Length: 95
Image (cartoon, rainbow, N blue to C red; front, top):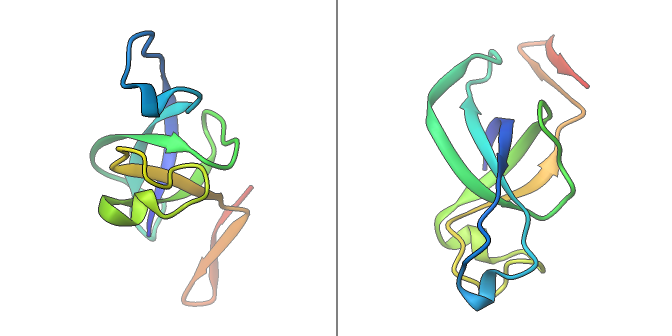
């Protein structure tokens, strides 16, 4: 699982039939210090996340293991909205 912040939404009016009904969000990866790293990924949203929220997401074959994405051609899925996290006893993020 990876930490990320939802940066935006993605709308695709034409898509593979197996992707119908999925909401897509653009996610920017975060490190444990809440700093943006790397690029962006488009992820299917399985939990109702919104822009600006910190989320946990998975990529690769793990992305197809949620109820929403099972047997769908997804390479990334948001599977949790983060409420808080600590590193070394110091709170880094609180929703």
